[in-house]
Image 1 (tube, rainbow, N blue to C red):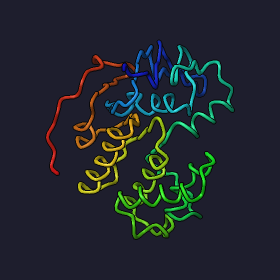
Image 2: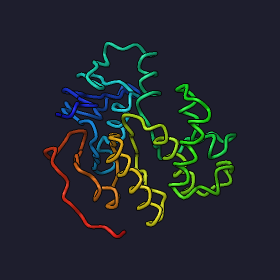
Image 3: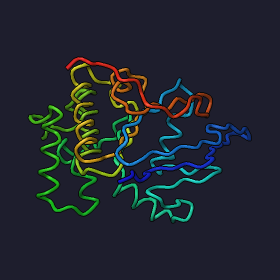
Amino acid sequence: MANTSVIRLEQVGKVFEQKKQRFQALKQIDLTVESSEFVVIAGPSGSGKTTLLNLIGLLDQPSSGKLFFNGRDLSQCSSTELAQLRRDQIGFVFQAYNLMPVLTALENTEMVMEFRGMAADKRRAAARKTLTALGLGELMDRYPDQLSGGQQQRVAVARAVAGEPMLVIADEPTANLDSRTAESLMDLMSQLNREHGITFIFSSHDPRVISRAKRVISLCDGSIVSPVSQAVEFSHAV
């Protein structure tokens, strides 16, 4: 059976205005990401990667063009409907972690699933399983300020993937991780992609991430500068 597009952008542009200055962050982007893809968006700083991720994650709206999520024209959605799609269908891994300081690692991981209305025992089991897989099994009851930066990043990843959303968006997910932890993280994400069909879209400069991609999209100055092509297969240490 043919894949179904999770995200489709048609001639999407994004303009920011500051102090009467206009800056075109994205220019006429055409892009389709199919269900179960494992995609990396690559490019230098200022190329538009984060802006593109914010649009795909429904955190912002395009200035021009159309954006579709799972076949749905998002220009026809209310702000409430967009918020529900973000909550129920998309997991986020931010560079700044965005963990709740008053919640433990386990509670942070459960949080999105609780918002979705998942039963307490089911979400607790899913959170424990994911944290253990990320090497945090003995740190579940610690608060963010009791964890290292790398540990906080792993909690952020656990929160994003534990509920098995349709799409996970990760902005430089391995930026603060050592090599071993980064490999474990990518192993888990690859497994979720392969076994559960979760679509992943990354922004990254990290060869450890790019080497796992099934497709690499190159951005420069707000435009896609190379054809959307299959990534070269790289070997990596186990």
